[in-house]
Image 1 (cartoon, helix red, strand yellow):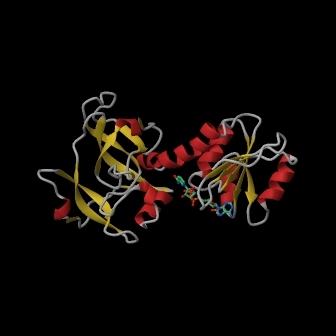
Image 2: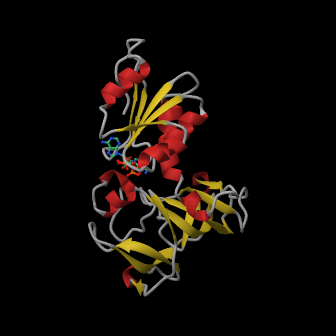
Image 3: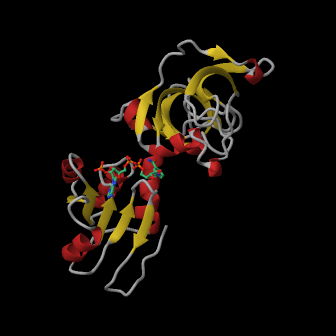
Length: 262
Ligand SMILES: NC(=O)c1ccc[n+]([C@@H]2O[C@H](COP(=O)([O-])OP(=O)(O)OC[C@H]3O[C@@H](n4cnc5c(N)ncnc54)[C@H](OP(=O)(O)O)[C@@H]3O)[C@@H](O)[C@H]2O)c1
């Protein structure tokens, strides 16, 4: 996962097929076809409606899901070509719709704002966003840092907090502990008082240690062997953030529970 500052329009082309009658326009990165690159284009943008604000995008996060959508491998995201991609953003509110009074022009915000299911994406200069998908950006985070967080943080939170209810006294194993989701999962589990192990290799091992977990080199040790020796056979709550996608398994051999989750 990474975040990029939204740069200049470059040599943006104008796609007449995308231009509506008197529609306001913005510049966006758009896939001309699935599997290809992204092109700068001028695209229409809506005015903020009920419960929406218009955000001037400062930075947009790029996650594996964005790449899968671009490559045509994420039918569940319901995105068609010529749609603007991009799920995460950080930016500044520049217009406020009716019923969005909790936000004001000039507010710095971040969120998981669109780019799936027909919502306009965040790889654009401006995007209209439902206020339920936004939060105020903490002042201590830069725009780029904030744009890197939403989807990865929500993924880690859903698994560790909502599903596994990780807390003090538990042992957690994070696969891919230095990755986009994994490095947040490690910090969440540590903050919630768990004993945390995390898999990585090479330079990732020091990153994992620096985040407060015990690193395990997945090239040198099998997960089964390490978990068994580290927990005396008790097992752990396991957060998998490898390339097959996050999978949450809450397992306790002591209680006789069976692997589950997904
Ligand atoms: N990013 C998101 O917001 C998000 C949201 C939902 C779902 N997902 C899914 O979650 C998965 C991970 O995404 P990500 O953004 O976190 O990717 P990522 O940044 O590439 O992290 C993947 C991590 O997996 C580690 N890894 C690779 N092979 C491993 C192995 N054999 N055993 C243990 N760890 C291994 C890598 O560690 P080393 O570098 O040390 O090799 C790397 O840090 C992807 O399938 C993605 O589609 C991501």
